Length: 93
Image 1 (spheres, one colour):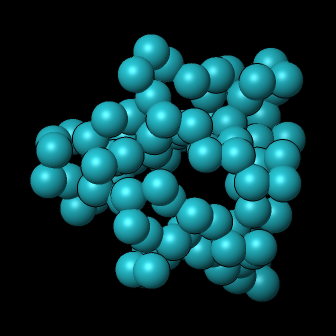
Image 2 (cartoon, rainbow, N blue to C red):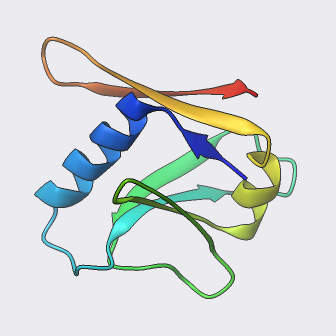
């Protein structure tokens, strides 16, 4: 299952908290194919049917099935620039 670094946890919570969503909101990662290497990310009100849910210290990430398979052995990290731009990175465990 995907794991989050402390920085990614903080960034995900910050992004989700800024969006006017429900208490069940989270960051959803979607892959277009079973062997996806590029992913779409969006803040959503909740998980969709079939999504895997990763929750770390209050940060919720929803993984659609293709993303869940592709990211099963990965670690999500994040970096915030001085201008406030967020960059996510994936590494292997």
